[in-house]
Amino acid sequence: MPHDHHHHHALPDTGDTRVLWAVIVNVALTLAQIVAGVISGSLAMIADAIHNLSDALSLIIAFFARRIARRPADADMTFGYGRAEVVAALVNYTTLIVIALYLVSEGIGRLFNPVEVEGWIVVIVAGIAFVVDAVTALLIMRLSRDSVNMRAAFLHNIADALGSIAVIVAGVLILLYDWRLIDPILTLVIAGYILWHSATGLRPVIRILMLASPDDPPLEEVLAALEGMPGVASIHHVHLWRMQEHEVSLDAHVVIDGSKAPAELRAALRQMLSDRFGIHHGMIEMETAEESCADAARIGH
Image (cartoon, rainbow, N blue to C red):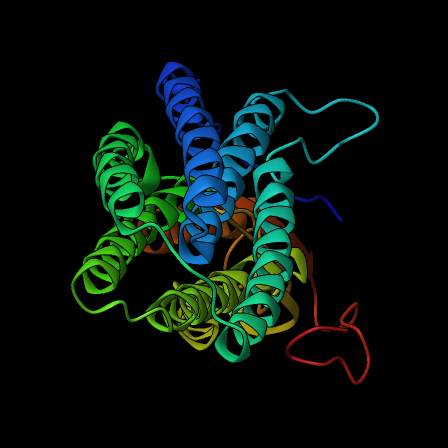
């Protein structure tokens, strides 16, 4: 039986220049922080620098992923390249988790063997880092509304700004009270925040790659709407998933009751899915009661 394909294509993105500037300022900040961290002996500053470096790498990966994602479908990728950004997000989050675990190991080692830290260098460079992090966040804030990559990068830069504030506090406490343990303590706090944030961001990325049903629209609500349409006797073999971050797709077998012509019913179903749920890519197979799959599962195969 025929299938319906109604594709929704995003407009070309115009934010690449913002991403490039965000990369440049993050790389420059990372180099400055690493040098200052080595000179001052501050592990917290090096931890923050590594986090900034991961943000710069994340933005670089996101930049190329965004360009790849805009390629049209071809013989090699018949579904298109839209998931390139989702794959990039998976790489970025996985890398962040590895980095955070390394920082946890180093921080624990410093707890038992604290070293001298030059507080003034820490405070000055962390202050500069805070300004750069804020500028970077502003550069990509608008882009973060529409992309899982940019949203992760934006939240990372907010986290960096908070981490810079924490490093400033550590430098002040070292200057005032020579409290060296604050440096590894804050390193562990920063690492813990990276782990929490990465785990939170990783879940929706994995769900997209695993073809999980989206939270919105709810599957049961879509099923009820389909089964409630005049002319529909029953629905089975239903699949609902995200083609990419902002495109939901549906696959379903519809058993007709004969009260409407198949072409008319198919058009009505497609219109309802588009208007009510924003589902613009539908694959609907029409069946009569005689043609219906035996013992068919309502959801899946």
